[in-house]
Length: 413
Image (tube, rainbow, N blue to C red; front, side, top):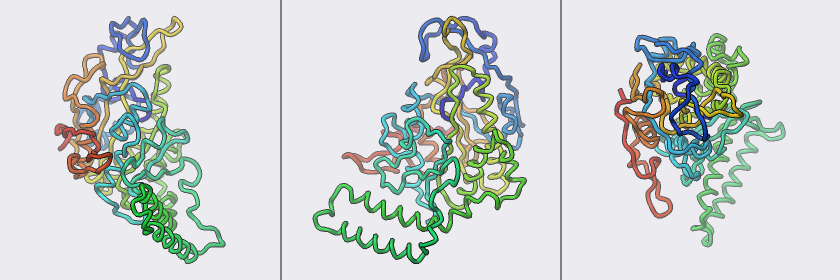
């Protein structure tokens, strides 16, 4: 959820903050300076499911007990950067600087591929790229094979899946074999064996082969018309407000079903410095039904226990805002001290709340952990040990958590 959803406006309600609404804030944190005021949530919260999870009333479909009781809400995470690009990179790669492998790259590096005809790591964005761009799904210093493969948000998800009429599969195979022979001769050249780009050339050859295989496997995979109408409707493909994200969630289920290891979907527009009610209401509506359908679908197919679903932004929001132009601006600034994320499936606790923030949602105060511990926990749930999943680069063995982290055992069933 690019931009940073407000924790108190989604899954961490704060009655005390609502009571203080538009009174002057005594805090000084936040991006803006000057006089500040508290902002209560524009949404009502209620307890849902048998577990009694707190949830904003804008979430209609996630509130279904069949879905809500699968969620494990975590309120104790803290970020490290107030700026979107660095914070996104930190959440997606473990580093604020860029150039490191994405979580999905590490996962596919550790787990390998279940389907040789499909990428192991797939990314779906909106028409607008997220801040920091493709660095969010980079292979970093891992071999190029582990970089995320992006699907286009409009038109055909992947271009050139169908070869031109003038080119048969046999013709393509012959061309690839000839190219592979030339590249192999190039790699075996005595003067180039140790060339720093030798690995990139090998990865490029591998990507050509994967693209060739994808021409036979992907067309059926991305043809959503093979799904029953009730499934399409359940993901919201019949509603313009949910169709785009719904299509991506349905594609994610189909890909995981076919052996893709890691699928990442971006939803932008959560950066509500102003017009909080309008902005968050629209974003929640766009993702609520599709995400609920995804969880139900995975559950009904017996896949949820083996699939980890993670919902998160890059940081949280402040409980207060500044005066702009002498008038109140009903929104929130960036906050690294408190945020909310949730997990479903994959061995996480069901219908649970882990961690807590203070009475106005400004700071995490229970079960507090940095993002690197969330990453370590995700790897653990995937059967990987962060301390053992390493790659030698720059003179040392590197890992997702940078220099180690700890598993958040409270999240695990």
